[in-house]
Length: 46
Image (cartoon, rainbow, N blue to C red; front, side, top):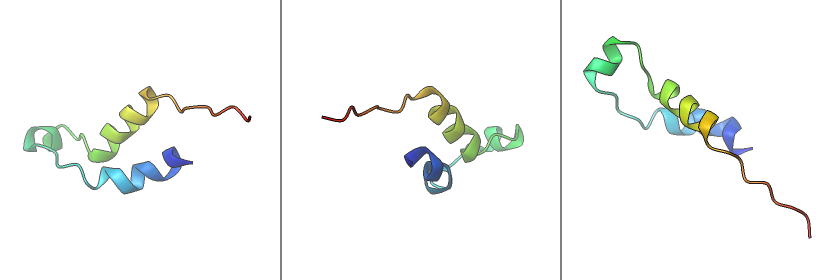
């Protein structure tokens, strides 16, 4: 499941502005938000 590993793989690649860091926003917050809004495609068996 891509969503299961995406958080660890992608979140460390995001560079946050100092303002975001001060507010406590991390790369993990951003990736979680994206993953919660992007639907997982469903492939129907043939």
